[in-house]
Image (cartoon, rainbow, N blue to C red; front, top):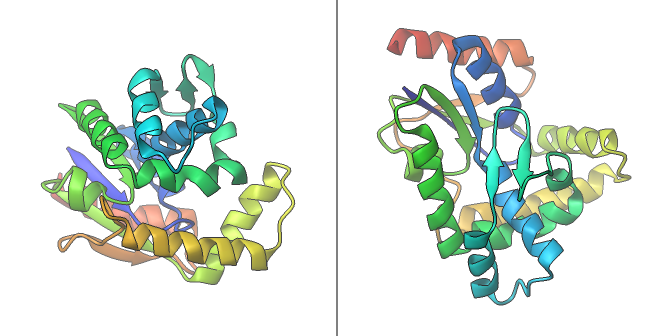
Length: 215
């Protein structure tokens, strides 16, 4: 069974998906981490992000392993490295690249084949797994999402202001929605859940109740 959780940055997708998967005994797939890892590889290799063919070529060459709790790039743990502001700023070059997206969608479908899995991202229910029996779309107010991102950055030792995070988030929201391939869009049959004012447990409780009815 495949469960998809989509939504904008900061809506809580990753934490909710990971927790839901643990409750259900399902695997968890963080697809955003895959795009971030490709972007990090591009940064480290010094690719020209204005020449998408360079990143596409690199993506075919790297070894990517996204497991439950860590991300390996060519055998090296980059779980924390892919979450920096530097990588966030260039991840769009991976997400907007048709060749990179085709490659990662193929890997995502391969990872989910024959598995019980909770997968989260921007296009999981709309593009990657359109026939998934359970689809969710998480949302939250812009301010709430920015506060969550700010807390994450500070936990990683980065200095930032709420205003700067909110501005960067607005740019990212626009990029996600206007992406030529795999844009952020709510699938017609996805259940929308606004996480404002809800605890993690409350959000997961709601999603779990829906899933267990389907099971």
